[in-house]
Image (tube, rainbow, N blue to C red; front, side, top):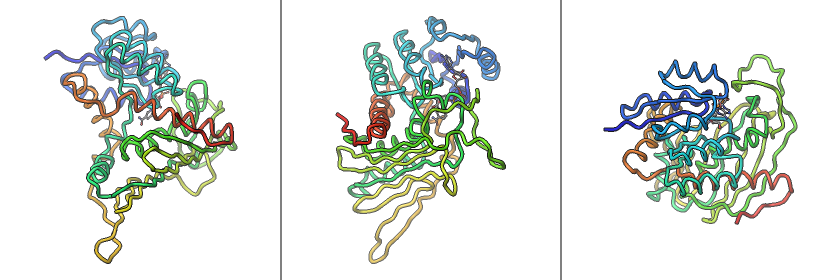
Length: 352
Ligand SMILES: NC(=O)c1ccc[n+]([C@@H]2O[C@H](COP(=O)([O-])OP(=O)(O)OC[C@H]3O[C@@H](n4cnc5c(N)ncnc54)[C@H](O)[C@@H]3O)[C@@H](O)[C@H]2O)c1
């Protein structure tokens, strides 16, 4: 069987999880990688045994033998790199967020259609075992009609700096970095409805808040303390299937501790997916809480990336229907655009 030949654009932190997942698959070869930071690209090539190294993705994409690419760059490079790859006839797995905004994201989807190639967006959390279990419960009617959801991803002191906090390169702060995951999860779990309106506030009051002792945080690879993005946000998002979602996120906020939560409420049962899967319902005359037993391996970051990459390769090799098509990335960007617009204008934004 002909191997699928893959290249990686952007060889920073997350590219390593893509590479490790590709390396597990016998039908895949990583044949090239590219980063504007030559030393980082060379180090990556050495670690993952990649024969060809580039600093310009347009040069790399001239290699006819490349079948598919992972785009794992700063957010502002997702659209140009993906569009160039699709035009060069490659399938693309692009990290989240799909682009800086919905207009760019739509251009990517249109290019994929014209090229007849796959554009998959890296909503990796959809591959978690807890997501799969809850999706099955919802689809088999165990929650009944879901009408309200709440989700949040909050850090007390977690602005990663570097490109993440430079709006030109990231598109925004925790809304586009963390919110993209949890809003997508809710939308995915409730059947991918379209968002119809968003009312939101974003705040930029604390910035980098750099002088904290005794607490570690994630630092961007090319760390700097430039910061022009929001440090926290809250939004009320309404969908065309009648579900209302309350969402909040922060990189820096004077809260007691970091937290991640995702809860859905139906007329038969409620469910919490984060921090751990649990269902809330009535059993006879009693209120009952139940926790499905989940494997710890099935909730690791590596597991989710392995599943995501396996799925991308299956879609290319076997024509499997894509779980995370680019269109889902566009819908998400419309919601994120509306959060920023609502905050700027002070009014609810209606999404067409
Ligand atoms: N799915 C997830 O859970 C998850 C987690 C972390 C990051 N991400 C996403 O992955 C992407 C990368 O994040 P990261 O943490 O790896 O960042 P990073 O800074 O560690 O790596 C990004 C790399 O892209 C390179 N780059 C920038 N412009 C380039 C260009 N024009 N051509 C080639 N390379 C270029 C940088 O030099 C850097 O090495 C971001 O979009 C981020 O949102 C996703």
